[in-house]
Length: 254
Image 1 (cartoon, rainbow, N blue to C red):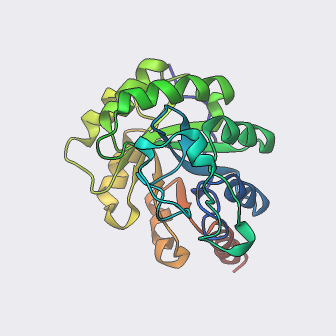
Image 2: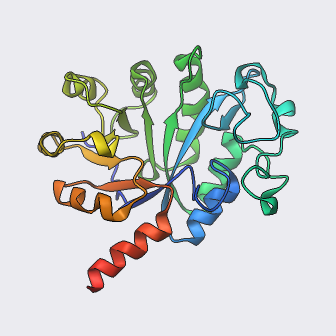
Image 3: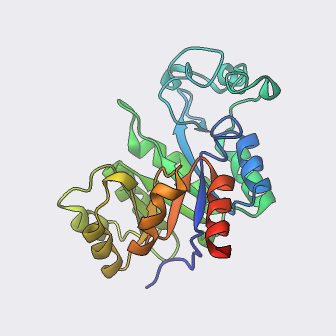
């Protein structure tokens, strides 16, 4: 059995084009598409009423005009928030996106997504996966989706929702643990997503030998990242997809 036939892009726009628009919003995804990105990385978690939303933090204070924990918030309360003005006046009245709306946009734009199952402290990974995976699997073709997480329980439960040929899973790591091989084998991972400054060349070589795709986060300095391409890295997840692409194009021309 094989994984979905995913053509992993060289660049994946982190939380949408988050250097140009408020992160994890519909506008940020549209901006990524307009900048030429074919894939985006997004975070999903649940509100207190069970609504799956595209959001990174456990609370709303950093990226909205409100305060409060997602775990105690309803969808109606979340929709009252302005999640754009913090980034710039022209994004005023941007609203938090739920998973359904984001999946519809990804289909409209024919984009792929690396969807991170974001398990913040005190939240239940099983409930989150059970809310997200059926919607995701029904909405997107397998070749346009990778589900990733730092949370082992979330990844293991995601695998129970679909076999490897129907769902690509990615293991997210800060520093790579000694048991990474066993962890990735247990979930039949498609890809490994390391924090790029902490990845060692020998580790990347081992990942490649074992057949994993390598998607590094979060690379925003294309010149600093340049040497890593020779390690067999497949993708750089970046806040700056347009600037990164210009750098790569200029090097090809040179």
